[in-house]
Length: 199
Image (cartoon, rainbow, N blue to C red; front, side, top):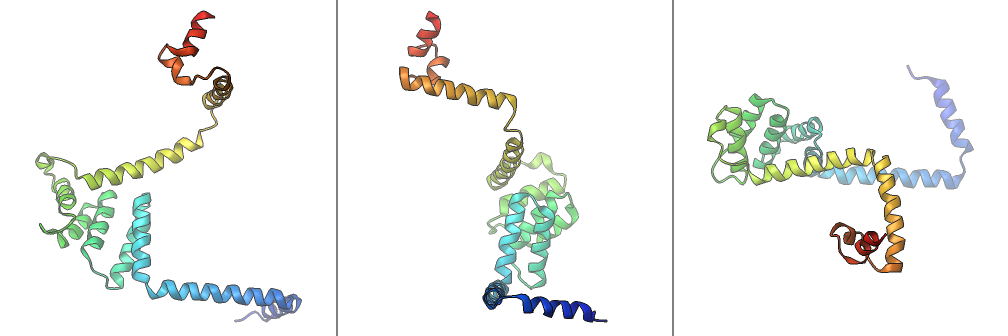
């Protein structure tokens, strides 16, 4: 049942609006509706891009969700099956990963090396693996880098970093006067090393 009090309150609040506020609200609403129309016209591309985005970030559940939506829309491609298989592989759901990989496994596939590598792991044929495909290494490297960079940034204000910044300020001022840099200290030559040995 509709709450009539809420409806009355809504219309009372509309009376309090200025005409300019109301026009601004309507224009924002129209722009949101147009944006939604544009995105909904190409839901396949939007979900594919979001799936890849989540996969690259390591949000495997979100990536699986996006790729499954694409399959519901009837979008079939080698890329989709490979990416969905990789997501299941990352989550150690090897049965589902095998199903996806077998749908797109052929010698002409652009993901043949990656699929072959993953299938050898799934089928417990690790002794047959000669190398790890470059795409998998690059993907893992960027994924790990983003994770460790975010973890590193959490602890950037430690005592060691504060001391290092102060040292940089002190040495930065001396470079203007004596025309040397921090590297002179490490190689034990140059003007800075000479001054340190002298003192």
